Image (cartoon, rainbow, N blue to C red):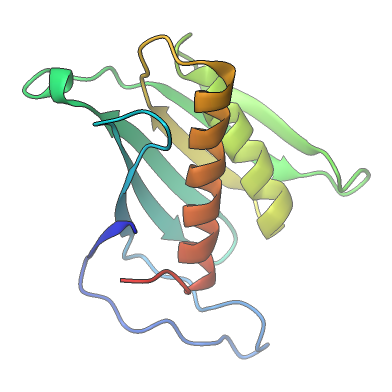
Length: 154
């Protein structure tokens, strides 16, 4: 179960179209255990805007206490109107250890939400397996979609 730290915010309401919750300038902040990597936490800051979404992600583990983290990668993705099963994506700033994680999250969220999505990512994992990293991407996407839909628990 994710640990949720909300900033003061009005409750999520339906927009006049009845489809999406209203945009907010108050981000949702979540901390979830990283799947299959003990003692590692994935931190998410999720901001739903009227025409886009902004997500910032980082990770912590016991060895990172008190140390500074690199900025990470910053990726912009948008839905592809000609091919809805694929999103268009560009890295605005890339750091080799974080670019793949950021790109996968940004492309998937842009496709699922139908809105341009900016993702800042400084998730650093020490020698993860493909399965561990994929589980982390999946967890980040699922928790972000819950927060964007206004249905996260906590």
